[in-house]
Length: 147
Image 1 (tube, rainbow, N blue to C red):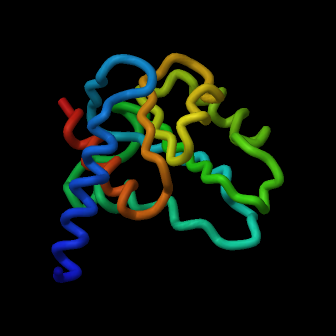
Image 2: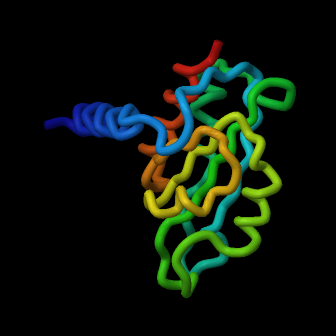
């Protein structure tokens, strides 16, 4: 199988994971411009984490307007990392999540157990991990909900 075929099949699997639906809330309609708020709980570890910029890049490449004035989407990154010495979100990430609890949607790039830690009632989507594949799938999910 060619590399291009593998990437295409992987993207289909990533999209199917997100198509399982929200862990919290009803399906959401989003308005452009999209304001992305990034909360990265994985910074400062022994190994660098994957960049958090793939969602933004994919939306820009698709021509989606970004910035304030439309819907706010929180991107919460928190993979299990032994170097953190804890499970779940840290105090700074929890404070940031609380500050943005009124967002139009929250996408958690981490384990499903983290959903219970996200304050507020915003619709919450689980994207499992922060690698490019899931970030690009999250960007497609956002695009599909634009009104």
